[in-house]
Image (tube, rainbow over all chains, first blue to last red; front, side, top):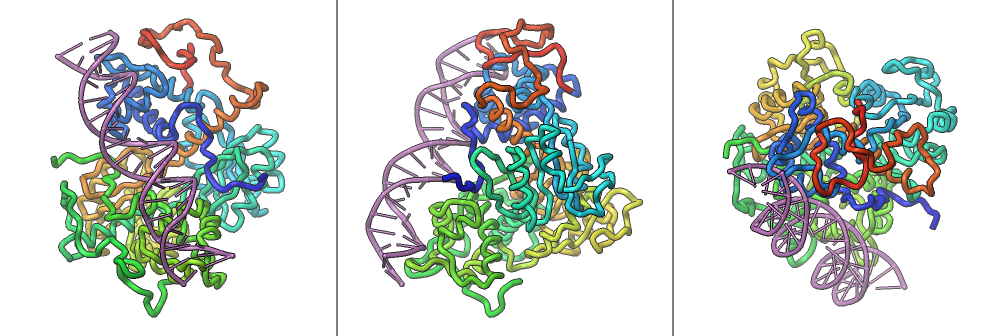
Length: 265
Length: 265
DNA sequence: ATATGTGAAACCCTTCACAGCT
DNA sequence: AGCTGTGAAGGGTTTCACATAT
């Protein structure tokens, strides 16, 4: 043991299921919008619609937090905003550091979404000496040599990695060694971290590939023309079946399609 | 019917579980790296380590695609790269449009991750006349008035939304009306789309909030020394029902912590 | 009358453990 | 001997449906 584990230690989260935690920010956003419009209460039905989930799920989610609703009435918006904020740990300030101030890093630094909700960009860090000192989003970029000092002095426990893939693991190791225990990774690599450190990744290339998978399926499902003209072929039934049999045919190998002469780049 | 559903129609994906689909891009990336190093075969154990999952899961995932391995040996790297690419629909070219060329949009357009794997940025679209004509990542930005024409002429079925939250739904509606059936949404809003349209969202603020939740828990788990200083001693005891008539006084209530006098911004 | 809170059922995903093939 | 492919067990998540509270 003592070897670095690979991903998402899952952190037993007291009693709240991980799936629920992942939806709390969604509820919070919807509630904040209601709060700004001075709406005093919401029903699970309304709030669920605003958050894009179904109401039974939302009620079950809230039940893990406590009994915060009133039967026959609904939920008090302000009260829920506070309770969810507290549950998520947003009533305190989280200083974060961002490493890798290239195109993406700079865009993220400029993105207002952080500051608005408990996160404060404590430092921007880059390895390029030409970047150091330059202000990005009103903050002067610092050199990566000072990473440990920066993390320590600011009490940073959350780091954002927006470096090229090749540098990510190395940066991650330094962040962890310096005391960071949560990492948001935008670099297209799998990061190895010790137990006790949480990693979440955002990879837009992966998201697109998942969409492509479904897109391809849709195209195959249609009569045969590619088009996909507006409409929504609801297909309420278990329709589908269509060409291409799923089963790995008794004999050998997969559905269809063998190696082509030329590999796709 | 006819009403727009809210999120992730889940698209029955023939036989491949959604969770497996979401991991295929990960496997593909690891395999591509092996391929570049001319590694001929991998075991499930090795590949799993490289992709950051466990080997049983990987084998089960691959079993949905077919029998692509050789017992006692492992998987042929090149062969798997091709099969997974094909399964994901990456052997064809996917023209995409990106709407909203601000900081984030520009950064995404510059990100190489797209082009490298089957995705081609067919057009960049913005509502700001001042942006129109400007080259971003080598492509001239076009005006949103031409959205429908652009989608149609390029046969675009995948759209990326990187606009401010307020404009996202409206842009989404136009994309869908124009024929787009898959959307990657970077705006912090829930999008309503008709059945048959897939939406995936990327929201870094949400990711950070999830990390904060676990981070908070870690801090509380420690012996007792207040690791995270500057805390907000949230009325440790069961504080009185403070001002705010909001408190829906009643039976149970949650674990601890009532409304504070001052709400966190 | 209305909407929450929650056992129970259904479903999906992961992990185990080993039969079966090379 | 070694590694894949997969039934079966185990956990987690979603959905149902209704008792319960206002």
